[in-house]
Image 1 (spheres, rainbow, N blue to C red):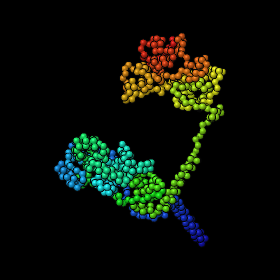
Image 2: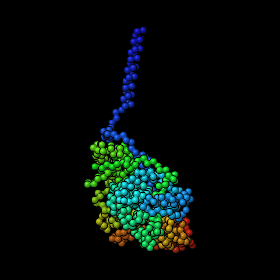
Image 3: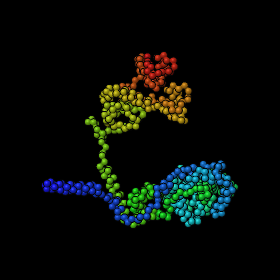
Image 4: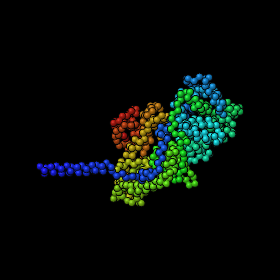
Length: 605
């Protein structure tokens, strides 16, 4: 009995020990050793700034979206100011509001039917767009107002950026105008905006706005009228000057508007309509979407070495797209470093704090990451699998002994072989050709030999059969390749001119009874039947040349030809030198030119 109890106790202790070991093993399996990457180890030393980022995905999407720009640009270019729009806005009320705007603005804002129509059109079709634009304006307008105040430019001109680019710094017009203020390349250079492979400062909100402000100031000194300044911004000062002359010397926009380019006639009214909608958006139920970030919640930091947006995003735990949107002037996702020049990157203020507090570690990581990628690229090239060389047959000769011949139109292996005094078989061997067909433009390896009468004669005898086969294959392939499908705008005359043939030949070749051809119809082109009937070499003896020629059948020797699909009497006659369409008709008792595939024709009967 005692022995039995002791055995039970021992069994219980043994079970507990096993369970403890298994639990410990499970804990080890659940907590594997984590190996930190170099990036994580660098970031673990950062001094953390726990201010939440203020730029969310919705706001970023608004910044990159080009749909508002496309819609608004199309509206301004195509809007008809003379068409009345059915939208609830009493004319008298509109006149009162425009008068109130005019009192506090340097612009001459007067009511007219065209302006009312454009305002109503925007209200009817673009309410949602303006709601989104007002959210963006909370980020950009403070920049604009600051730049304009320095140059004593009316702050209302900030609304012009809405008309120009829909507040999208990446907007590019069909003419190539770029950025918030839509500078052309030449104008951007004229106002000292840097444009190179890495940077396009036409997309830099601060620098482009400063350039626009400088332009407005110069134009006001010339015209002395802000409406004319806007017109010159759109169409150029030359067009404004011409409009003034054509109007008899009038100098007010509304007096010369009808003499301006069509787009400019709607440009200033679109600007005034935009100003009205921003001023009276509440009265029309336009509720601005939430602007998550204001301009003053971001800041810039100078970059001391070249770094990519990806490196910055990885280090600061922020989306790469966010960096791109705050720094639209960097074209390739890289902040470059030029000796003697300073470049800045704009970030949310909490990220700027993290960057400045940890610059030493950040630049160490950038250097390590750049060197690692460079080394990896070199290793990839060094150890990349080499392309497997083509198998060289034992009879092949070293490339240094070869000449290269580029195949021309009408060539065949027989003609090329005779030119270089070699056999067709040798050409096929040297170039790994399985058939006698060769593509136009292909370079063939040839090892020429000194021509001797005996060699020429031997080659002529050996290759005569192969040459005939090669010529036939080349001819048949060319005929297929020369089919032409009729496209819009084609006629028989233009097609004949394109392929160096005549209308009559095209009609005969394709059994056409009139000059009318349907769109999509496949035509056989007469030139397809033209092949070189003798080799290019003329230096060999006349009896050898005769042995290479494709002889015309004698008139007293009969031969049968079976009509193929696409054949015509003209194309068949071309296959037999010296044979005419009339001969074929005569030999076969054909009265018209109606032949069908499979029909047997006698040639030289």
